[in-house]
Image 1 (cartoon, rainbow, N blue to C red):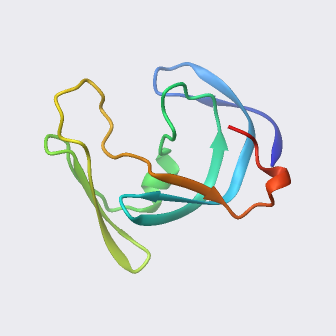
Image 2 (cartoon, rainbow, N blue to C red; image 1 turned 90 degrees about the vertical axis):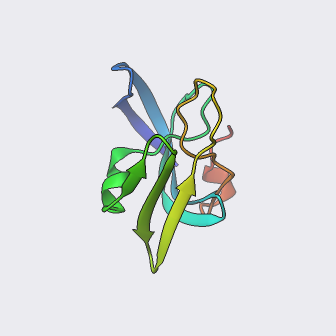
Length: 111
């Protein structure tokens, strides 16, 4: 779905323009299915960044940054996501596996 441009502030303090979103997108992490509206942004090497609104919606969250896992209630389930335990410099907690959308394909932006 195309939108009027919206400026989105990103973690480094800069901003990027968002001109499209995927309503009711389904995304899967480690076998757990989630649904939310995704904003399409030029992210470089990242597939997806979880926004604070989504994290607030799944509160309370338990996080062990050293062991790289997070635990939270979602729907009628309890979810535990385990990040990669490597020594590389990437701070990612978990790996995105799949994104799809229930929106008609004519409205879906091409990545």
